[in-house]
Structure formats: C-alpha cells, structure tokens
Length: 199
Image (cartoon, rainbow, N blue to C red; front, side):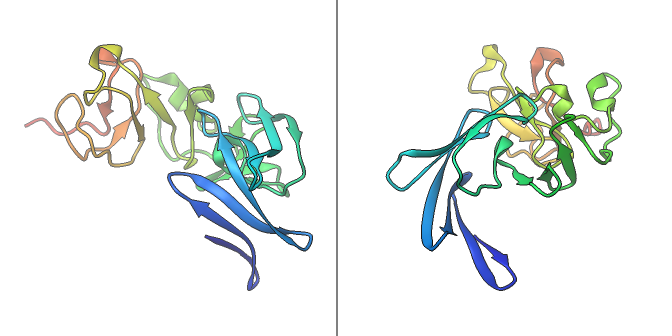
C-alpha cells in the first residue's frame, strides 16, 4: 500500500496479517524497515534489511512512550496504530485517542451496559484495561477471553471485536450474531449482543 503526498509516493507498506514493513526514502536512499511486535500488538522495534534493530520503543500501559531510540521516521507505534505527531494523538478511525490522558476526544455512540460499569464511561480507552485489551476502531474494545475448561471449543481463546460478525458459534450455538467480549457471565464465555429473540 502506498502513502501519497500529492501525487508523490512517500512510503510503501507491505501487509500480511499485520503491517510487515515500510519502504521509504531517507535522504537519497530507499530504506526498508521491518516491524517487530509484542503480544499486545505494539511496535517494539524496527529492523533494517540485515535484521539489525535500528529503532526501539517502550510504552506505558496507555501508550505513552517511556523510551525510544533510533531516527527512522515511523508513524505506527502503540497497538500498531497510526500516531499523528501534529496532534499528539493516535488515529483510531472513529475517534482520536489522547495517550497522555488515556481518553478519547469524542464520546462513544454505544450506550453501555449497566451490568458492566466500565462500559458506561463515554471517553475511556479499552475499559481502562489497556494491558489486556485494545480499541482499534475507536468504538469498542477487542480483547481475549479464555475459559481453561473449554480449550478448543467455541468458548476457547478467540478474538472478537464488539459489533463485528464472528464466524464461530457461541455457547448457544448461534452463528453470525454480534458479540461483545465479556469476562464474567456464565462460564466466562461470549454473550451474544444483542441477544437473539427467543424461539
């Protein structure tokens, strides 16, 4: 994928399941950089074509940089998301995220769930739990749910973003319903959202 300024290509990105590399002109040389991620999806380092780390990044839980090294221009950092240096915020599609406060600038359109008070806060990032969840769309969290009794079943470790159609079945056998990740309900599994009408 090319990034353009006017009609000039400034960067080219290669994608697989996530962003793999960027190729950009630094000075007069075309330079390839390869992304290294941690388990949360944060970009932790960039390597050159020889595999040597050229840049490193360390963040706090909400994405504030603790230490950085290197000078390679790179906009994709915390959670692998695009950082806008002019605003000092991350672009998460629906809303901008202020990493200094751990809050969004605009309200989430979702009303929230009275049984889960964290969802009632309209500006909070990833239900105040950024270590275990992320909010790549700026609309709701994406997290992991694990039930050790049901490894490998529909209730095992699967990633599901709220409001997105899940291809796997939930405990009730519903396929293609919208899910909200919820840690707590019976057996700690996925609860359909909204609940399907009774037969």
